[in-house]
Every structure is written in structure tokens, then in C-alpha cells.
Length: 460
Image (cartoon, one colour):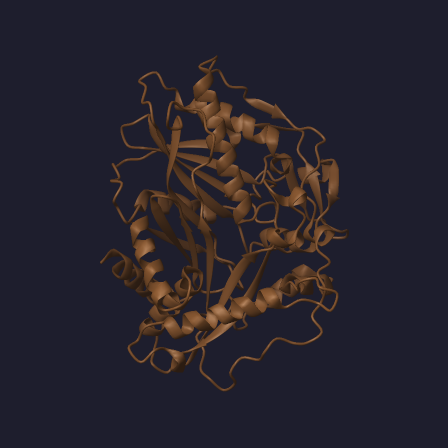
């Protein structure tokens, strides 16, 4: 119970409270964002562990949320507590690959295994003593010049954009440390300060409640939503990686069909699901997370680590699949739903956000636990962070000292959430797909089929 001794920072916002409570009751563990780094100037004298610790020290100086821990008491409002210090050697681990991995490989079994293990490990051990994030360094096989940095984080403190901010700050710090050629002996302990953390969403957005209900789903149709909500919730995770020209080719195909990649990817997943499910399955509901940062004051959110997300749903009917089995009609449905979501504003002009409904729920724990045994709220989720380009103005002679390569976005299964979650991220070289589902509840065959179909679609 060490967390109750920590100095209070501020109360949790309602969105932060949902993530904190879900972690507290083992409904959700964590998320991850992994990036490969390669030295542009290989050196036999490189001491990777010291380099990483010195770089991480710089990251922590810039992001005070990394010292914050959500505290969830039984009888009072949840709040953020602040750690006085962090021992870097207790939050960073180094793992050596046992096999070489070619840059063109679509699969990365060692990374998948590592991420699956981490997404099945909550932060509850020695809670209140260590921070609610970890950094795992997966070293390249027989090389000091390359590694994958896996940032694993608590969802109450970080959204996907925050994870990008972490990796950007980390890459710049790696390059800065490499450029200075000074003493490579790292500081092991870093002490916190009183710098404020990000504000909660409700302090930055009025979160008006819509006066009209959303359009009802089609009635009387058989919909697949996987197994009923079941606990305990164990995560399965796999990933695929493709050269980015595959995505560019898909983008051109989207343009020819007058839609976008953002709309077409969920439609493609729906098509793969329909191809993997019984022909009697007539409907699928897709959940689409979105960032609210563009609607918030830039000074409060740009480059700031915090949780500022929303989501909306769209139902896709099998009867709306194109006659040739393609998914362009569904893509246009998703595009229309996306436009409706962003155009939906209150009479005073503020955009509506679906997460506003959480402020009407006094007991988040009771709300979450009441879902056990019931039907899930959606069939699948596609979380697409879009393009994450190389950081700008990095030290290095013509090219940065550390070049960022393959990316993967990952997360645990959410006990009452979608039976299949697909995370997508790309950069100048690669596009990564991460697939999450709940183990041991009977959905494995369907999910494995979708992964195989997507591999063949983009890999052919």
C-alpha cells in the first residue's frame, strides 16, 4: 500500500479513472509502443546500457507524468501520487535476441513473445514504489549497433500520441548523448520535481452531453461479438510488418475508390472477419478510437504526455459488402460515420465526445464488473496512429546518430472490450500491424484466420 504514502498531485479525470480502475481490477494491464533504432556510425566502443540509461534520464527530466502513479482508494476519489525518485535500473531491462531478424521479415516472434508477456504483467507488484511504465531494450542479435526500445505504459497516463512523444524524446536524447562523447557513466537514481503533469480532459474540453441518442444499429440481425465478457483476461498478441510501399499502393487503390486508408483499413478487417465467420453472421460493429488533441488548447497538449482520446462505433452489414467481395462500400460507410462524428457539435459550438458519458457514472468499478458474462460492446477495434515520421533536427553528420526503423503499436486485451483489436502505425520505411485478443475464450481460430488473410493481402 505504498501508493497511499505518496504526495498528491491532483484528482484523476474521469477518463483517467476508467483506465486506472480497469488496471486495479485486472480488466486491463497496459499498452506498448516499440521502435527499432540503428546506429548510423557503428562503434566497437559503444556501451549500450549506459547510453540508454543516460538518454532515459533526459526523457524523465522533460515529462513529469512519468513520476506519477494513479492511486485508487476504496472510499475516496482516485488521484495522482508522485514518486520521489526512480531507480532507472529497476525500470529498464535488457534482453538479447537469440536469432537474427532480417529487415524484410514480416514476422518477429521474439518481439511478439516479449510484448505478450509484458501485456500479461500489470504494474501492481510493488505498486507505489516503481512507476507505471517500463522500458525493455531488445538488443539485435550479435550487434551493439541496433535494438528495439519497447515503451510499456499505463493507459491512464498516456495515449498513443504520448507514446510517440516518448519515442521522439528518447531518440533525440540518444543522439544528444552520442554527440557529446562525454562521461558515459549514467546516473542511476533520478529525483522528481514539482512540475505539473498534464491536465485532465475535462479541464480542457467542456464535454457536453448529446441531447439526441446515436442512430440505432440494425435490429434483428445476427452479429458476431466474440465470446461473452470473461475473466480472468489473458492477452494474446501477434504482429506483422511490411515495407511502406505496400501501404502506399493501398493508398492509391483507396483514392481510385474515392476513400481513405483510415476508412479502408477497418473495412478490410471487417471483410476478413466476414470471410472467417459463418455465413449467417450478418453484422459487425467496429470501434474506432480518435485523438481529441486537435480540439484542445495546443499549449496544454502539444508534446505533452497525457490521455486525451475518444472513440465512436460504426455497424457494418454483410449485405453491404461489394458484389465482388471487396470492402469499398464499407470503407465509404466508415468515412461517412467519421465525418458525422467530427461534425457533431453542441448548440454552443463545442464538439461532442462520447467519453463525456463517463461523468454520469459514479462507480466505475461497479460499471466495469457488471459487464462480466454479458455480450461485448463491439466486434473489433482498429486503432490507427497514422504516420510517425523520423524526428527532425537530430544531431549527426548528415544523418542522425540513431535512425528509427520498424514500429509496432501494441496493447493488452480489455476484458469487456472488442474480441479483436488491430493497432496500426507506419513511418518512412515500414507499416506495422499489431493484433490483440483474449486467450482461452474460443476466439483464437477466427483471429488467426484474419491475421493470415491480412498477411496474404499485403504480402502478395
